[in-house]
Image (cartoon, rainbow, N blue to C red; front, side, top):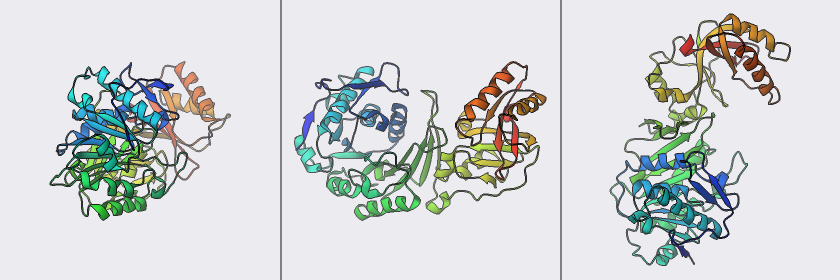
Length: 430
């Protein structure tokens, strides 16, 4: 049984959690049911995804999110694609929050009289009961759905989990909604928003579930990052929603609202191509360049294609490939003409000093003196440190160097053999 909510009529009684989304325009305060805010897709990510979806030739029909949560992604799809949307949420309170958020977006965009908002609905009920949901909407179910979006709930605070722990289950959703997709020459349009912690084996399991219903449907895996050395979103775009001849795509969301994301893609179909580069440790030396890259870029398997864009050099000297700071050594500077390419680089610079003393309370002043010898005005610690030591030592560097008259920026990282620190001058200053 589904309860139908009209976003233009739903009030906020009983909703207590409302917060400004840091990635949304000022004044867009979204409602969240209990503990819903940490699970919600950031508005900037949601709209970037919808903008990419707008480039797809979707069939006519509804946009359906069968586990819509707080509804931010649903609202982005509806407003960007200018299509009526249906969100389904098992929790009545979260369904209410989703309806209110749809209205908030329409009001912000002065779109309360537009068709996409007037005809959009939120249903409180079971997202795997497709026939019941369409019956509650009193609409013809044949060719009803142009796109199905699914972001299933999964265990929180867990580094790994199985596909059977997702709710609703992928196979249950596929079998329930398969009869109601609009006809399209490339197959039904689906966007599966999955856990970024899925292994390659689990991705193969997802593809197996897809093929059991839609054999050989076109597909594009999409890794999305907002920086901070991690994958924020992993999604599988299928059929009409996939990109032609594109097996993998990496999207780097910029920190500044309104800026275009950096998008990389490959037509390679063999997922083995996405394996991490091989680690190749060599002795440290002055004069070479060290770049610490976005870890999410490596996970997507697209780092090789990107390096071909920014360097003619054969980039194979990976000092480290795992963790938050993948470290690449090379002879020539990266060519980051497009400022968006810089989003994929945590730091890059030339090695000017090899330091064989570990950092400590006793050696931090010596590091300041070495930095001053190289005319540095700032120095950032980019290595694994005890959380109690990092802010203390970074603060000491900032205070002491700010009182001098250096002109160059730099950073300190660790050679993977563990006993040598590399003092680097940032590329723009080297």
